[in-house]
Image (tube, rainbow, N blue to C red):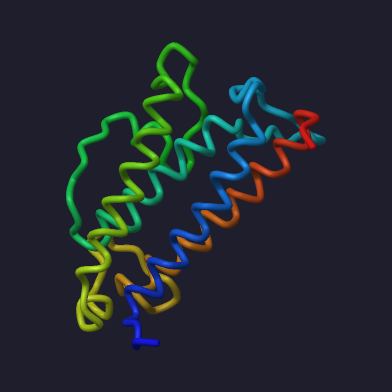
Length: 164
C-alpha cells in the first residue's frame, strides 16, 4: 500500500465522521427538526440548529481557518457559537441547509488535501488557540471532535423524538 500523507488521513477521518452524521440525519426524517427538548432547567438545541451549526463549524474551522475558499453562505453566522435558534421564518429552508452542508464538506476536504505539513503547522487564520497551539492542524483536529460531539446530540435527539 502506498504511503498516505497527513492531509489524506485527516480528510479520511473528516469524511468518515460525516458519514456517521449523515446516518443520524436519516433517523430524523419525518420529525419536527425545530423542536427543542428541556431537561430540568436546560433547553437543548434543536436538530435544525445543530445541523446548521455543523455547517458553520466546517466552514469556520476548516475553510476560514486554513484560508480556503469563501463560499459566501450568509445564513451560517446565525448558527455560530453561542447563538440560539432564530424564528423559523428567518431560517433557511432545510434543503438549502443540507446542500450547504454537502458543499462546505466537499470544498473543505478538497482544499485541505492541498495543504502541506508546513502549512498545517502554520497559524490558523481565525485566531483560535487550543492550549498554546494555534496551528491549522489543531483547528482540523478540533473540527473532527466538534462534529463527533454534535453527532451524538443528533443521536440523542432522534431518541427523544421516539425514533429507534
